[in-house]
Length: 178
Image (cartoon, rainbow, N blue to C red; front, top):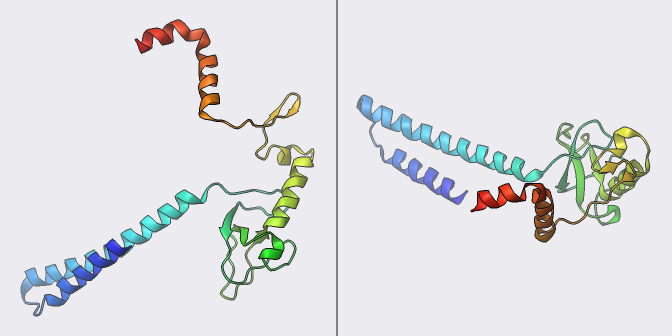
């Protein structure tokens, strides 16, 4: 931001230095400076929105509660949980909340959809305990014998799994590495 702001200020100062706009070349120079200020701000806005989208992660879908994906956000100002009608804060499990980006609140903060951490925990545990196929498949690895617990994947366990998978191809693998 500091780089974009400083280059925009430099461009503005260069534009101010054009004292008398005489001739076509001077007019085009002034127009180019004005256009470059607009393009710098547009570039900053697009880069900022790209970074925000890249770090937000995947949306959380909870069937029966809300139809759109919800994203974890830190609430700012006054926010109410739509499910339990409590003010989001220490009482509801912290200031992090699931908010829908499709359902936007109006200028006064009413509307939209927010879910506090406590309500999320309650409804997520109900979804795991439920036997319906649509809710059971939400982020749980299910085998023939029921849900499987995910092991913590470290570098060592990853390398062991690779070696087990490459065992049938040991001769070809050794030949390829040499």
